[in-house]
Image 1 (cartoon, rainbow, N blue to C red):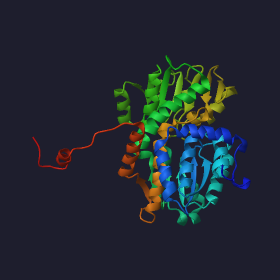
Image 2: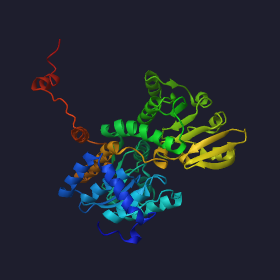
Image 3: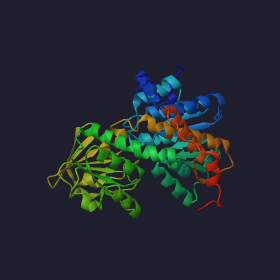
Image 4: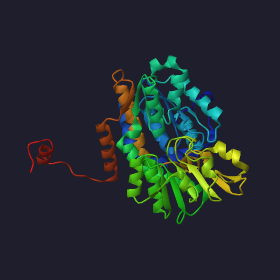
Amino acid sequence: MVAAVDKSKYEIKDIALAPKGNQRIEWAGREMPVLKQIRERFAKEKPFAGIRLIACCHVTTETAHLAIALKAGGADALLIASNPLSTQDDVAACLVADYGIPVYAIKGEDNETYHRHVQIALDHKPNIIIDDGSDVTATLVKERQNQIPDIIGTTEETTTGIVRLQAMFNDGVLTFPAMNVNDADTKHFFDNRYGTGQSTLDGIIRATNILLAGKTIVVVGYGWCGKGTAMRARGLGAEVIVTEIDPTKAIEAVMDGFRVMPMAEAAPQADLFITVTGNKHVIRKEHFEVMKDGAIVCNSGHFDIEIDLESLNQMATEVKEVRNFTQQYNLANGKSVVVLGEGRLINLAAAEGHPSAVMDMSFANQALACEYLVKNKGKLQPGLHSIPEDVDKEIARLKLQAMGIKIDTLTPEQIKYINSWTVGT
């Protein structure tokens, strides 16, 4: 056990929770062999020696392994929560007590505390920012222009955050490199699809204990997160309706066997609604008005803006908590609408987030993206940069190796053939 961080340098619920957090972090590590190998290399090579790094992430057992790997690599690291309801308090305590990593995160913290923690993170004067939703980067650009010369770059692993970074770049205010971790194949194909699919339904079941078989579920948005959520919901016996604005994604949903229709048509039919769009107010007043009595609404997008809770509050004659993370809004028309997790990420508000095996690849991308920024300091243009293909492939290779799975390799004849244009029919 290392010396704990000075009390003035952390803000968590209870340091006494550390032993439980340590046990859970160790359990998660059993399914994170890729990040373990990266951590072991980092410990030898110290790629982050002299680098101040802040991470704004969901403070979970999986994130703990990323933070530990970065510190092993020599980083002067500090961690804050990226969402008020996503912190696991025992994990935060363990990182402080057992690993000496300053953490500012408390499950259920209010918005004022959350934004204060963002300011504390920027007071660390980071060279690298690991962001989840781009709140820290946006705050830096808006309020801390004087610190931008110290920034080597940032990494981002959410669709929401990438959209914000692109908007910053379009407006000419993103003047440093940003690594698009979200679009790495070993991230979005697995984290967004299999991670979100499983963990979203896990959160819903924990919050409600309802049977999904036989229910009609509307999945709002058919990106990778929507695909995974729809697939898992159908696997549990639900009838799934998809709503979309993108015609290509809508066709894909149809070809995958789902019913597709506008939200106005879907709203009266469903028992459960799951938003995964990254956009604002995709479920609104006119939808609440026609929902079934007792319809359940939840969100698995990054921010709590997808469900128009302000309008729902105005429509309600009474709001009461009926279970943990479950609020019932009684409406003037005699019906009720149930909202899970205050409209925040249900998979982290009511459950534990993505399984460790999935986050192993996502956080391997984060760790290697940070290393790539350091190795290429001063060489990368401002704006978004993809994870190099060889890095992406190496993460997949390490994961297969850890799973004991072997694949074929090209023969010399095959290599010659695919590189030639002279051979044909």
